[in-house]
Length: 313
Length: 291
Image (tube, rainbow over all chains, first blue to last red):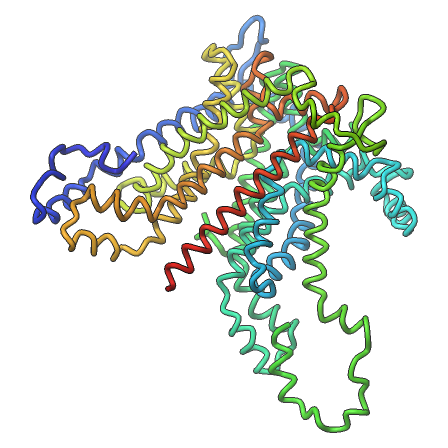
């Protein structure tokens, strides 16, 4: 367990007390970091990096699961798969982006309140942010089925307030149903990834010296200008980290679209898992998986470059 | 918001107090408390599903689906293992969760020490290798593991689930423990060495106790991640190795037994107390440290 358990030179620590310097020198031996990194590194290479190579290779193979696959460098699968499933791919990115923006709008006041206004309740509120999300993701998503059910209290209240009519007017839902609509899927996605947005935001807001904001006020800025020119720029690392941690898993998620959506809200994750586990069309599924990963990597790279926070990565 | 207070003192408030109505009732209050009100609404949004889970664990549904409230009943609480397969799946999830947590925490902690304490070649490569699993959608990791196992003819089952869980927990352990190690004051260890502690003593008596809270937090996080994972697990499992999330997913289409909400309620209470106790301990430690 300890750093010394893999110590390459036995006996160094048994020396007399005045050997402390020598022991320290041995601890800094060049092989030590590699030995410490070896188990975790090997695990990540074999079970994270190598599988990605297999995935890439699988996408370029032809054949079937029963007759076996052969690598034929069939690059044509990529345009085919993208053409066939571009709708689901774009829908996933749009849903994930909407959920990310909504989560940011909801999490910012939340994190701000916990960081600056909560006082001695701060720790309690943090517990309330984390604890609900340590219980099953699936059970909580199923609870949204109860909440959004057609004869449920939420649907009734929204209908009474005229919100249902408004949403139907915009085209977000049809009929009086909330469940099975894009709105339900985005609601679920926003909800499920909210702590991934809240915690980085809180971490960066908490570090801001409140006197900076007070100074802005002393210099006759309105609270809003003070926020826009002082607090918001200082919290940007949290905004970038939070949006990445929300967008990436949301784009690949299919639990929300499966449990809260309908066939018309299918996301790319559903297609990939369906092709792999039910249709057994491995090359197409692998190609879609690769496309999803590359799309997200490209979007994330552009986003991080533009927001000027490369040091986060 | 706090900025309004010092600014108000610069305004000559004594001039004509009657000219302006001092308080304009609810609207003004609403404007001043807009941010906390938004936060309160956000809390409602976050906690609503948990309230529903608890509430519906006492439901007595008429059909197969536990969708609409019928009447109060304790049936599910009296017979939590009633539905076939539920407790088997819970057992598998617990076993996988514990083993994955132990191994991922051990491997991750070793790597975290290397990354926080040592200079070596290939630092940026290791950083990328640790960061990438956290930035990859689960469906990509799951499907790539499936192609690996299928191509190498590794039979799917509890072992492959365990391998996958250790893989995605390691990065989170490394990040958590690394932050704790990097935050340590190096002078504490230097002081121990100056007081004639050898390297092993320094490590076990000074370094390890200081890093322990980070390791514990990493272990709890690993367990929560492993116990809750559906997407990657579903790619690496066989029909005979059904974890709890897979069981829940299966019932979602066939009709959910009320017992699932019982499990959800117990998990919520356990998580609440685990995080709560953690907060209390860290508060006590901080108080002791400042004394």
